[in-house]
Image 1 (cartoon, rainbow, N blue to C red):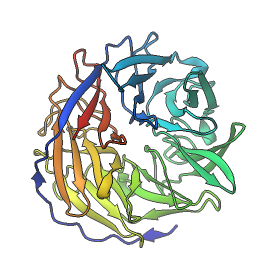
Image 2: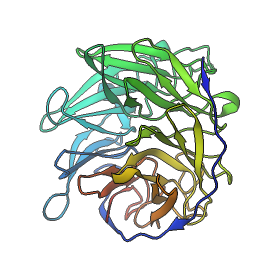
Image 3: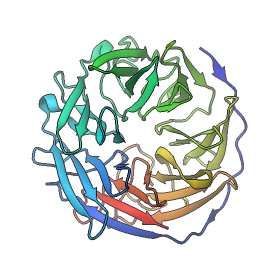
Length: 390
């Protein structure tokens, strides 16, 4: 297993000010879903937002929903009500909108349900219905997909790639340290890698497909800390980046210069998380340390890359993963980070009534507006959908 070198942390940079407008688009009621966790997806025209709610709905097992944000007042629609069983329950990871195999196809995952109760990968044809592409069998086949899925063309075949948090090598941590999997056309499922602990444990984020490689992170690794990794889906070789001993819950994104960017949930100079960069040589650099002040604390999710390589992301506000509460920086934040100046700007601080404790990143539309969800807060404390306009 190859390890890459780690570069020394950078100095903390100050927050700035920016003109923007925060809008609360929808507050969940429980009947239409509750606790939206995964990042939303946008249609190509940026007129419809798609997402999931982990709980609520008619059977309490979550929903798949859409929000029309074109002209007029936003219109919310429940597309699918999950009910456990073979359809799955508790959708959790980021949602993916693609034109594969047909225009307007959504892909996602559920934490539970399916034929064996260990979660599913599903697709939804917009204007059509839900299809379960795979039900995890548990054990060596993987269990509980926390993250979403990504697409990639390898060996001439378009396939779906993702991870499971548990399962795989069941001798690792007694419950399995997780897997990387692929689904080829015709629902042909394969386990591509079973984590051994020595190369990571518990991948929780959506994989990044970049340059014919799959990039991801594990929450745990040596001494209960995680690590970023890169995997070749053809040779199935997996290499771990040498990085600080912290929990890497969020995924990786790539800027226009080929640098990878990610978020560490803890660690950094103050213990409240960091933004890090991986350059083309594999060097990992801590470029910003959160302070639990106005800049937030404990970032989660995958950074979104906007124009001029400006990054957008969120902090959870409290430092227990998936937790709810008012931390020193409030109920979480939305921020932007300029990769040219290393300046972080807090765009919004949640107050509970407008959302609380977001757990995944934002989506950017064609006009530079941001869309996201928070699993708590709002009128019913069942979570919200929000927008930030510049």
